[in-house]
Length: 360
Length: 251
Ligand SMILES: Nc1ncnc2c1ncn2[C@@H]1O[C@H](COP(=O)(O)OP(=O)(O)O)[C@@H](O)[C@H]1O
Ligand SMILES: [Mg+2]
Picture: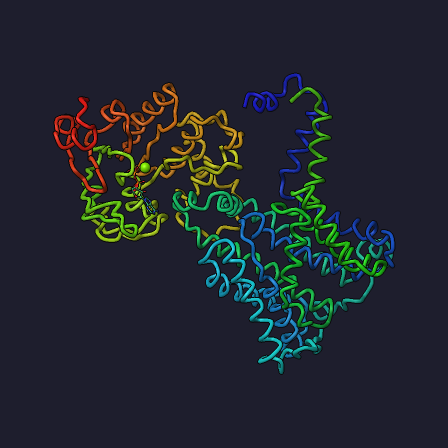
């Protein structure tokens, strides 16, 4: 306790700690995270597309943003609120189908498609949340899994005529953004190097928005209440807070993120596979989030990058890529329970201690 | 009448943990509930605060039936409870603990403010600070709750219960496991809460000295049933109480 108060007083603290304080002050700001996300979408492709065995296509980078949105939302539920859902494929796949059907029958405007996808996911999350959240722990996980599989079989069978059944939905038609900007239109010059094309701006833009929204949610009263629920649900109840509603809110918010991601995926793939509703998709998002590190916003992003790299690049090089993925997952979770992002923050605090020397 | 229970009963299978208990608490008239281990004291409090549903009987708060309401509804009406084992948020800082408690007090049981910055809610932050200062925890606000010493954890527990400015506060063995010094501090604190905040306190306690210092009335439970109820002096002289609870020993 006395350590803390000492560190907070300026006085004889070294230059390094003064700088660190200022750095911390900066990092505390919400705009810092958003600026970080913008810098990320500019720099990331330059590094990522030059990784070993990468054959330089931007499509995977965009796919990473889409899955990262899904993962960020999932972590608000798993990492912050402490609820493990095993049925998030419903929101990803359900919204993807809604997006596809909407594009085929109503409008191909990308922003409207994403909106419809998000609303669909919110409605699904409300219904499934109300039905699943009555039970805690493992029952919640199993109930969400059951609802997910139910939707999968409905899409496969009874609704096969609309969804395309086993073949998936192929009628996706995406119009230019705002009626004028063809997604494939590239930029010239510097803008071309930084932002590539309209499609990239769309996907990267939604990624930045998702980060901004998540940062805000985490810093709202909800962030504090979610964490409190994860730690001691009964206490929260006895502070006069309606835990059930806050849990439902966490579920719906994470569903909304999954919906945006699902809609974007339909635009990106121009196709909806029935596998998007399958339980393996639900498992993938759990693995991605845990691999990256739960309880942070950039953890799930890191997990997405690692997962999609192995799934798409390593898989081209090594036949047993699923084994590689499994080994990576086990290693990280075994050695670093805080995930890949936990390694990063661990190194960061070690460096800080070195910089501060004897100060603390 | 602030609180009244009528024929409050809780059965766990064969066992009747609370047996037709009638309690009456006037505003400002603090009550101690005593009785041997397993007498049903904690269960009675749990029935009143909504953690358990009674098998039979009623709980009236300010004349209104609150039987079977959810804990958060009951807390929102002005009842609050401090747990027998410190129920805090161990991985959050003391300040965060107080902020969450203040959110429940300032914003009601639910609010759709997930896109509003917590840092802009001055009312919440002020209440959190005030609570920490009142309880002497302000200096430790950046410490994770789990690394507080035992006595401070109990104080944080009480701070959480007090953040909502309750009218009626249940304290379930607040000094259990405390050193004599910590116990003294805690009793001082309870007396201060009573005086400064005008909170009516229902105290479950074993230590007679504390009970006589803090309470205006005493209710004695034995095997789930209330066997006596009165002022400390009346209870002291009650032969039934001597027999059942104190085993005939003089107090
Ligand atoms: N949830 C429960 N299930 C079954 N029996 C319980 C439960 N809670 C308490 N009891 C029993 O009820 C009786 C009263 O317990 P309690 O109210 O905790 O006593 P006290 O607080 O006076 O020591 C005890 O015999 C206890 O074992
Ligand atoms: Mg007890």
